[in-house]
Image 1 (tube, helix red, strand yellow):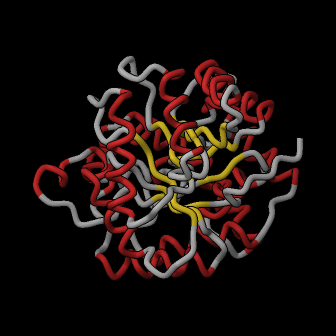
Image 2 (spheres, rainbow, N blue to C red):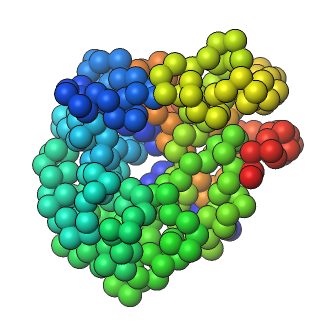
Amino acid sequence: MNHTTPLGRMGMGAMTWGQPTGWSRWTPAQLAYGPSHGAEEEQHALDASLAAGVDLIDTAAFYSNGASERRLGELAQGRSFLIATKFPPSPFAGVESLPKALDDSLARLQRTSIDLYQHHFPSNRIPIPRLMSLMADALHAGRIKAVGVSNYSAAQMRLAHAELAKRGVALASNQVEYSLLHRRPEVDGVLDACRELGVTLIAYSPLGMGALTGKYSPTSRAGGLRRFLPNFNRKTMESVQAVVDLLRRIAGRYSKTPSQVALRWLLENDAVLPIPGAKNSRQATENAGALSFTLSPEEVDMLSQATLAWRM
C-alpha cells in the first residue's frame, strides 16, 4: 500500500542530548553511546537536520531523567519542528501517573502540546485499554496531537489501535528496533500490522547501534556497554563485515557512505521512518544525506538477501 504519514520520512533521535548530572549520567543510553558532544554540537546537529528536511526529533521522559527533553525544549524556542516524546518517566510508574508525567514533559519541552506522545514500553503496571483511554483524553484536550506506542508486539498494537478507535483516535506509530541487522519486525507480524492499520513503523537503532557505519570491526571494537552486547562480539562483527562491504560497494556508486545506504534501505519502505541518533552535527548531516538519493530495487534486494540471517 502507499503509506503516507504526517510524521515525515526521517527523524533524529536525541536520546543522549542534554547534560545529565548525578545518577542520570549512568543510564543505559549514556553508558552505551556516551554523552552528546556538548550543547553547541546539539544546536548544530538540529540546524543541520532541519536544513536537510528532517523535522521530527525523538526523545523521552526516561532519557537521562528528563535532561534530553529539557535540552530539546531549549533548542525548540522560536523553531518549528515536530517533537516526539514518551511516557512513562520510569519503569516503575503506573498508568494513573500519565497526566502528571505529561504535564512534566510539556514543562521541560516548553510546549503547550506534544506532536507525538508514545508509550515507551509495554508493562504489567500499565493496562493498554486504560492507557489508550487516557491518551485519547489528552488528545481531545489538545495536550497531544498524535498517539504512538513503542516496543509493542503486533497483538499489543492491534489492541491499542482498537481501543483508540472507540474514541475516534488513530494510532499513529509503533517505534521498534529495525535495521538490516535486526529484521524481526518483518517476521513477528509488526510490519504487516503497521501496513494493515496504516501505522508508521518508527525504526530506532536503524544503524544497528553503529555496527552498520563501518566504524567498527572485529579488531576495532565499540566502547561502553556496546562492547558487551551480542551484536558487537567478535564472531558477530566478523559476519557483519560482509554486510558492511556490500554497503560500501553500493555507497560508492552514489558517492555516499555505508550509513546512508543502510538508512536508505529502510527509507525505500514507505511505511518506515528511521530515527538515527546524532551526537554532533557531522553525524546529523551524514544521516540526513540518506534523503538525497534512492536505491534501485535490485540494490534493495541485494541488501535484503545479504541480511536474511538477521530476520530471526
